[in-house]
Length: 115
Image (tube, rainbow, N blue to C red; front, top):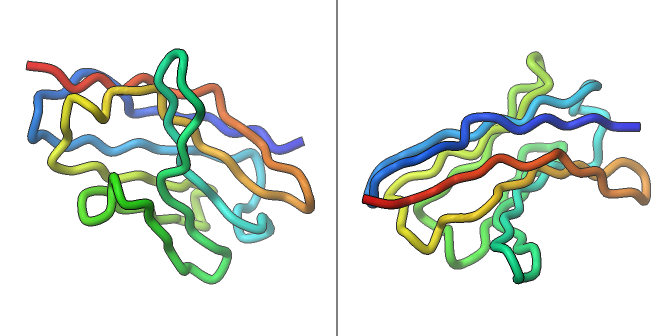
């Protein structure tokens, strides 16, 4: 029911910055929460950050202090600002949204950190 489209991925050098966007098909204020995950082939999808309806944020240790999640309710968009990127950040990054008891997913966007 909820459509999510990520964008902004690409190739960046170590130490560089990148901003990912997640556009939702409905007012994100009506969603129960927004999340960013990432996944490396052959590994489990990893939660990185979340933002609540009220704006409270939470980060997992691997990205704490480097990544920032934010939301723009008027644009129905959630962002992930990534700084000081490392090669180990290379992954497919996914946006997700909680609505009711269901978790919805975008298609993912590739981020590659390499010199």
